[in-house]
Length: 306
Image 1 (spheres, rainbow, N blue to C red):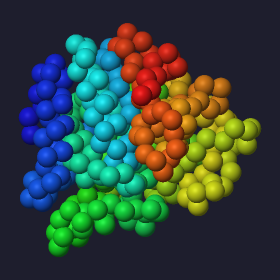
Image 2 (cartoon, rainbow, N blue to C red; image 1 turned 90 degrees about the vertical axis):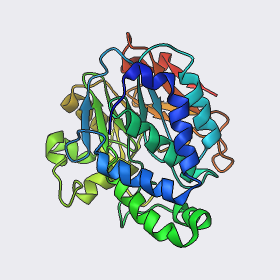
Image 3 (tube, rainbow, N blue to C red; image 1 turned 135 degrees about the vertical axis):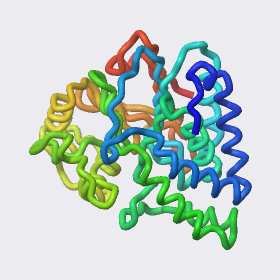
């Protein structure tokens, strides 16, 4: 795979995305796209942990998409209104629930394959490891509707592709980026100790929390989650996580919000929700668009809603 220059990539970002969307309708092309992504090793992670420097680039951060192709297209098209260079980060939950799950996944994989330095795809709880599937998880049934007898193989390849997604990213000196939240185990160990692979993934309880955790507005360190997976984490865990990673804000997804975003823990946790589907009842969707000369912890100034 050849990585094209940042500037050239963003001049044709919409075309690259739409090529992937078209592949979603053709079983052999979708299969090839999955194979290519699995083989590419798009990011240099340590067992799912990615540390990177923004290097003064405008940074777009997108929350849950859930097969909402219209909302995702709106975000992609807004990017080409600028001439800056970019880092584009998606926080997971690309599939399930929405009407265009395969198209969304294929479009994002295409983006990642064409610019592995500038597009970062995180794993959400709806891109599950085996044994930690959410409900509903209708993606396998959508594959069957699209591709008939090829669906089982394409689902197996999808699971392999999900294992290549980033679990947690750290923008050095600025932010933790994660789908659910920081694992509460950070209270006891350094973050590097949590990202020790057993069979290609960290320990499953760590993965579960990263994908499923939600913030809790009280002084408790953590509490059981009503979701039945993950935990609720309190402001003390947020402070520990930020101190141990030398960052200032946690930017995550996972929870619907009526206006597309919300803050917790005194502004130190930002939740982004970037799809508009009837099932969620949100008035607005939101994403983050931070100029290269600003910092991610100033997120409140750079939230865009639609």
